[in-house]
Every structure is written in structure tokens, then in C-alpha cells.
Length: 197
Length: 197
DNA sequence: GTCTATATTTGGATAGAC
DNA sequence: GTCTATCCAAATATAGAC
Image (cartoon, rainbow over all chains, first blue to last red; front, side):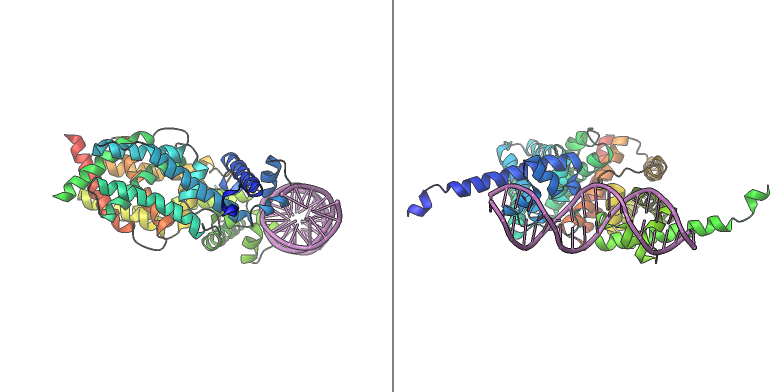
């Protein structure tokens, strides 16, 4: 089993360059907007010519796809790194803050991950699977607090993404909707409690 | 005062053509996405050549701006046409349905009116004023039901737009989040009631 | 793998004749 | 007001040399 243990330096180099391209792409979309990404700019940013990118990605959409995948992976890791308080209220507050913080710290990323604004772009099944995994994780946390109804999970995602959307659209950089997080949690938990009766 | 009472046929014609352009633009963005609008396609659609559009609009962004204005005007009219039930719960249900229906019947329009996805586009002050007017109308309705706290209005807009966003992004054409409208209203009103104690 | 060169398409916008 | 002609720039993508 030699082939599986020896390092493939060529592959490593390839992957490293791919990562470098994606990193540069994130910087550009933060600067010029998600739809404003151009392959020329992207190549220039890392000292390449545009056609060279095609050694790493089959198309521009493939680059968006890799970003989509990486973005959801980043959220998964962030969520898993965040502690999960025992107390219900604190657990939901932490989860909401993690999500909203993650979204607001990079609105262009949030746009790619959670909205459908790029004409013709759809994530590949492999990348979409990561997004699904993130949702499953949320479901798991709900279940650990005794909430199994899928409609309640949907209600929760609507509320948290609603905060993010309004914050980005109507008070970018501010905190007008961000500070409503605790209210949303209280409201939601009261609703769950009432439902149980 | 002759000049003010005589019809200006040239102006009427001009306004009619502007309206025709905007109508065609709405059709195109519904078909190809908001960002997929091109002036060539737009002109072709109404039997013009692209440069002729510049007799009616100064730039592509000006066209988006007119659409933004018209979109919010349409929402204002829709809201005003919708009856306002006396009972609180029914009033909020009606308001929520009106908003969500309006958004879901044309996601591209919702994207233009409520999200910031076109790089470089910002509505003109005059157009933005119409959007503000729509918000003021909502505030007025809240006030008539004894809700004055601006934070509660923000909470409301976050929840309703959250429903829309999730519905469009994760179940386009479906009703998975749409059917949560009544839950959202109940949850919100219970929250308001609790707050009053 | 990277480049140059180029194909091809498309975009928004302007000049100037009619 | 509308057109033709054109500009200019930008876009994605491909071919083929090195």
C-alpha cells in the first residue's frame, strides 16, 4: 500500500493553489460584491493570467461552488467550536448569535450561502450536502432540547435569517436588528412552551 | 393658466413609452433573474434598438431605480387595497399574508426591493422615499393596535421577511414557510402581550 | 502549469445622421 | 426620437506554444 501513504507533492501543490484562488475570490467578493467577481481580477490578484485558472477550476460557477462548499464548512466548524450551554435559553441564544455573527461578518458570503442571486448558479450535490449537514446539526441540537417538530426548526431558521436580512439590507454595519436576538429567542421559546400545552 | 390645463401629448407619449420599457424590464428579470437584465434584450423586446433607451433613462441603474420605485408603489397600493380587519389577530394575519404573497408572486421584484444584490445600485432619494412611505404605513397600523415600540416593528419585519427569504431560497414555488404565517402572528402577538405586563 | 494570443460574446454607453 | 455605427471595456473560455 505504498501509493496511499506517500505524500503526493504535486497534488498538495495543486490543492494549495486552489485554496489560494478561493481565498482571493473571497476577498474580491467582499470588496466588489458577489456578482462583481471577474476571473481577470481574480487571476491578477494572485499573479496569474486568467486562463491559468482553468487548470484548477472548470468554470466560474465551479469557483462559486467551491466557495459555497467552503462557506458552509466554515459555518459547521464555527458552530461545532461554539460551546453548547446546558440551559435551553442560553443554548438558543448562543446558536442564534453564532449564526447571525457569522452571516454579518461577511454579507457577500451569506448571500452566496443562503440566497439565490447569481443567475444560473446552483451548488453541486456534493457542496449542497455540506449545507444539509449544517441543517442536520441544528436539528440535532433542537432534538436534544426536546424539540422535534420540523415546523419549529423552519420557524427558527426563518427568524434568524430574517434578522440577518433586515440588518444587511436596512442598517448595514449597524446593530438595529442584531440587538433583537434575545427577544427572538424568548419569543420563540415561549411559543414552544405554549405549544406543549 | 393655460399651460397647466392643456394636455401635453408629447409628455404623455414619453411617459407611456417609459412605462412600456419598465413593464418589459419586469418581464425580463422574472425570466432571467434580476442581475441578468441587459439593455439590448430590453430594447429588442419592445422593438427598439438599445441606444434609444437613453432617450428615456440616463443609465441602466436609472431603470432599476424606476423599477424600485414602481415596485414599492405597487406594494403600497396593494396594502391600501387590502382591508384592515378590526380584530388584532386578523389584522396582523392579513398584513402578513399581503406582504408574503406580494413577495412570493415575484421573487425578482422582492430581491430588488428588499435585498442589496446589484453591485453599485442604490435607490435615489425619491424612490427610497416610497419605500419609507410603505414602512410608515406599517407603523401606522401598528399604532392603531396600540403598538408603538419601534423595536416591535423591526421584529415584525424581520419575521415576515425571514419567511419570504427561506421560502424563496429553500423551497421555491412551495409552501413550507408560507404556511407558518399564522404561527408567526400568534407568536408575535403573545410576545407583545407578555411585554405589556 | 503557465503563458500569449485570440475567439466569442456581451455588456453599457456615445456620436451623429436622419 | 430613433436609428446605424461604433466605441470601449469587460466577460468567459479555448488553442496551442513553451
